[in-house]
Figure 1 (spheres, helix red, strand yellow):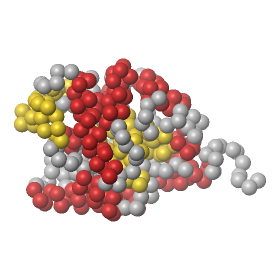
Figure 2: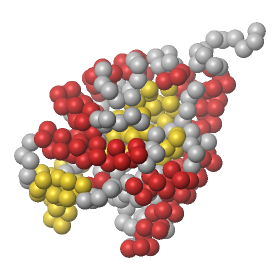
Figure 3: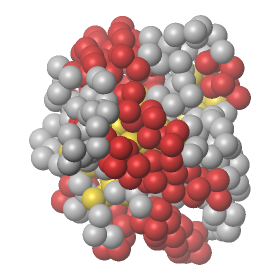
Figure 4: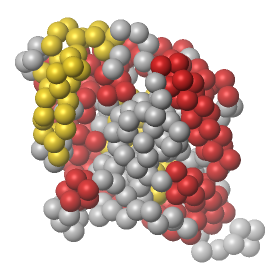
Length: 351
């Protein structure tokens, strides 16, 4: 009950990349960089285990960015002539590569880190990849001329890598779709179809992560415009509940998401955000436990997985480690408080 996991990314050590940045520059190059990525992956694998996280991740230590870490392995993309483009409905500008020809994978994408992590942990392993809609929203297109066609082309590549990751022994494959909170109509029109295409044929657990973004200024400013009640989830959760995706990872703690919206995900595993990645204040186990308790009114205990709100890539390394410990300690407290049934009874067990 209440098995813990994280949304995906963790801070890169200072000897691997710049710290405190979403798009950090690597500190080393060539073979030394590959060794450093491996070392960082093993370091965070051990940190998660030591903290008590149940379903661990490679921490995205081999990627400079959660989207572009995948795109770097795709042919048909021009990285030499990037263009400035507004993404997430022009929430912020970014220099992005351009699709200039048919898309195909140049090679495996996450084979090294997946096999490395699988060989060094007995815990369940999760690998994350960007979802098709979020990729389309983070790249310019001069070839396909249609967002849906482009998304489906990327979905085919994601599926190719996902099937290989499953063979590598990965237990959970998660597609990150922050764009789902921006283009809600498109989610229902073609976004979920693209997810189904990306996850087709998988027998491992599949997950989609939908949050309100990293704790960077552009996202924090956007959140201030959303009012006292953030109801984006209300528009897309019913469609996701009918989807073939097994799990939905979402933001909860310190957000203005009405917790009762969780009832719209009936039948799905809910990866409940109980750790705020936009704040350096470390949650107490009691705070984490209280959020779990509120969610239990709408989600059965067997379907509830305490998680982080989003990735922790831009965060201070020590703070991230303390937050992992708070995540595990809060889940352990919830197991004691809510008992084997996962319900608040008001009585001590055995009386």
